[in-house]
Structures are given as structure tokens and as C-alpha cells.
Image (cartoon, rainbow over the protein chains, first blue to last red):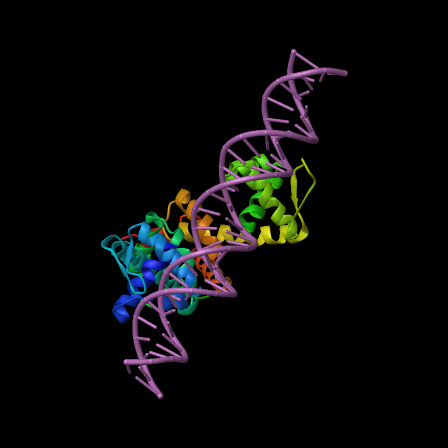
Length: 129
Length: 129
DNA sequence: TTTGAAAGTTAGCCTTGACTAAGTTTTGTA
DNA sequence: TACAAAACTTAGTCAAGGCTAACTTTCAAA
């Protein structure tokens, strides 16, 4: 849960200079009270800071986690695409897959996408039957 | 949850001709009461049948789900290995990843592992730097 | 054949992550 | 500037999935 939240908060702050609970709720497909409750957990975990009725921002620790998550997310998406998955499905599946990718597997993914010199469509052509 | 259970029940029945709660608990890393409760949910879902104090077996519906899960599991593991992940990590990561692999992504994985004619070590050699 | 240990179940509790309903604060606009 | 709508929070509920403690059933060995 924490990973999805900090990843999205980082994205929203990048884009809008703030992360509002209402936008988090919309993007995560949950209702605002759920966001309030989960943000409280992230505050307790030292990942975000917040003032009541105000937007949410990452702490340094939260920002570090978000960076790692976003990097891993991009690697998973790139790997799926390189394997021939269309970008929309890749994006959707990566959302779930990324939380189960160990450091070791992530490194293998990185080696793989780096070794294909075709950043977006990947090895598609050479893997098709 | 259901997928992990039916997959494991199928494996245990294959190996021992029955799936005992105590073995399920051990393999899933949970306590026996947790298994009892979850098996009740699977009975409600029509995936397994059970008599009190007896072993657990899959219904036809459960067996079909188990087959699909085991096939998908093998494909995910094979894909990770082909990507250069060592077999132990691949097995571990697949356990979590498999639940987030859509049909479309699964097909891409199948095309990929089929296109490498090296079933176990995969494209490792050609992907190494 | 009895009996004790192993296996299984029940009851009750906890946390997580979702929800609705209802209240409070903020904010844009008339 | 006042006030209605939007945003946010609080309170209370629920299901899933975990646990321990305590009870019942099964089974094997003496």
C-alpha cells in the first residue's frame, strides 16, 4: 500500500506541485475517507507529512522510497513491453507485478532491457513468430 | 488466496493422494486454524470439498483453476529464468508475480520462452553483457 | 483395547483496507 | 463578504486473513 501511495504522491507533486487527497482517491479508485486513513498510517511510518485539510507531501524518507518505486516501475513496464506486451496492458500489469520483484529479479530485468537496444518496442520483432 | 490454495492442493494430491490441512499450513507458512477458515471460504466458492477431520480435495471447478494456475506459474518461472534470474529467486518471485499476470501478458511470456530454444537457462547467454 | 499424541476445529481477537453517513473546514463565486 | 459547494475528516461498519487458546476427533502404539 505504502508504495502505491508514495509513488502516486511523487507523481502528483511533480505534475501539480501538490498531492490532494481527492486526487489520490480518484487515481487509486478508492473513496476519500480511505485515503485519509491510509495517509495517517504513512505519517506514522514517517513517509509523508500533512496538516489537516491541506495537501500531502513526502518526507525525505518517503521521497527516497518513491524514487526507488518509480525506477522499479519503469523497469518492469519496459521489460513487459520488450517482451511484446502492449504498453497499456504493461502499465496495468506492472502496477501489481512490481511489488513482487526482488532486487535480484530487478537487476535481471535491467540487464535485459539494456541489452535490447530498442527502448520502447523492445525485442518484439525478433520474438514474434 | 484461492489460487495459492488450489495450486498447492493439486500439488499435494498429485504427490500424496491427499491434501491435509497440516501440510497446507506448513507449506503456506500459516497456522492450522487459518487453513480451516480459508478452506471454508473455498468450499463456499465451490472450489474444494471436505468432510470434517478429513483431507481436502478439489472440485472439478477447483481442478480447472489449479491447472490454469500451475500452467501460468510454470510460464512465469520459465520467463524469469530465461531473463537471467536464478531458479530459486525465480520460483520465489513467481509466487507473487503470477497473480498479477493478465492473459495478454501470459501469452507474451509464452511466445518469449518458446522463441528461446533453451528451455531452462533461456536467453541468458545472449543477454549477458 | 485403551490412551495419549497428533490433527483438526471452534471461538475470540487483531490489523488492514475498504465502505457510508455525517460533521467540519476551506474556497470560489454571486 | 456571505454562503453554498467542494474538500477533508471522524465515526462506525464490514470482510479478509492472520493469530492464540481451548476443545474434539482420529489414530497408532503399548
